[in-house]
Image (cartoon, rainbow, N blue to C red; front, side, top):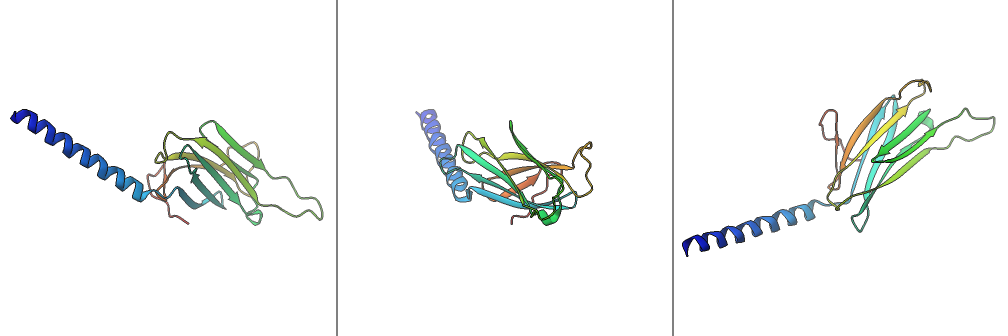
Length: 154
């Protein structure tokens, strides 16, 4: 009888603890994380936005043309988006680079990783562009996976 009561008490306590953790996760959930990075001398804005149904995340990067990037590439999972700039023709207006990929997630609390490579004004096409890998979390946090440091949200 005492053993059964002890098991029942542990079960109730565990359920209460699980409920508390679920409430904490839900309270921390924002569904977005956005940071600004400097890669190869180029200011790059990145964003992770979780879908309303919690089954996918859109990862994006944008670079102003005034930064003079020659290459911007983003990768997550098996998704890639890439743009290489070409020299402008007379009268042509430079356009900002805006890339995005959509990746599936198992649940809305799952973090996602984005690798972003940027070739700045002096980058050569036959060389590897500097890159960083960022882990975005839906509670408005992002971590540089190489250093383990939290990155400031914008």
